[in-house]
Length: 477
Image (cartoon, rainbow, N blue to C red; front, side, top):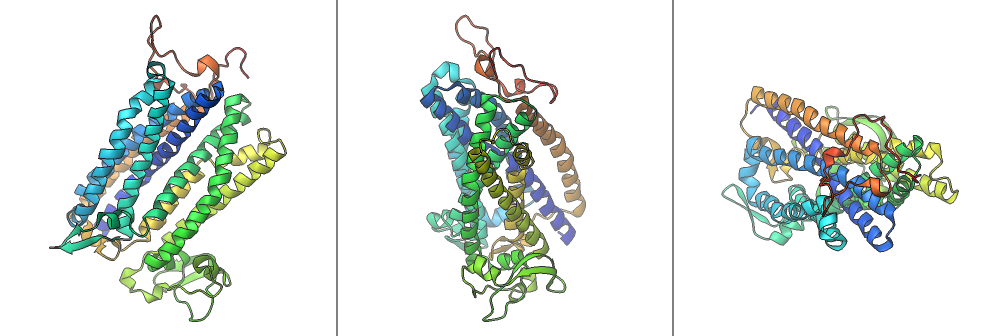
């Protein structure tokens, strides 16, 4: 395979995983959110929690379906485009993905039907158990996927025999050095992204004059979640950075845009600039003295390697990870600011009426998902030129396809993905745009003796147009 075909194969994988990761992030967060809502309803008997449950379970079902479909494509690509990787590392990654199916996917599939359709059939207690099991299943799924990806970043517990990876210590394989930080970072990112989506939905309805108890509860819960999880995510990110410095120093040097550091001198933090791989310098650098050492080593005079200390062929493309990292961090700071602003508005009793805050929350709706994409670009591009860090190069992992073959499949993927997942995303936004109803109109009759059989299905959840006002039940807000 020539260099151009390799690049297109990488772009194709990046394109498909970028679509895929959005939906599991939403399902992880929404599943736990639904479990919380149903638990609060069972404890307090407040109708507002049940109304919100029925509203968001439709969005969850659509996101879950699109996540499953896009995930199947990811699995096939390992055999079609990356057969060299599958042959070399399949002894580790194959079982980990199989464990995900045998535990998480079967658990989710077993309880999903009860969760979506069974509230009027199995009783509140068993239905709540089903919701919790689905939420637990999403977390187990994230655990196995992150274990596999983390092993590729910091491989441990294996030997290479006859040109193939053979696991010799599964605990070391799974609990590799970067696994705890990556798992925590991803799960909290999913919770934070979901809170931002929920908060943006509430803000949108309030700005349009749809002020009722479910919308207010949505906003309050979402902003509380942002206030708590955004600083926690920053803390986890700091720990993750220290782990990256220890195990992937070339990645950290590329992220920071540092080429060489003078012994005994504190390292500045480059806020902005343009890393030039050819001239081995960061152009137009805006630096803060000593702050790089403080943030990256927790010491005023701490040192870390520059990119010049690594062979040219082992250096990640600095310009890409330099800016993707800053997009992620910048959005993270805006999330912290949103949480603090919401707290101040709450203390002033203006949380539901402050239009600047509501517009801010609405604008931040996609910020969590964008930050997840930026973070994955940082971690995956920063691993280059390795597919298994320090063990197997990406160029050795790809299948022997021609440039024309990869270009054709990439073009097909782009067209099909934008049609299928674009339509799914529009429909998901329509469901969210409909807004939560209240009381008996919040959910359809679900069958039963003497009742018309009307199954609850996600495809009945959205209006034909986004500007259609939902019907307000008599006595509603």
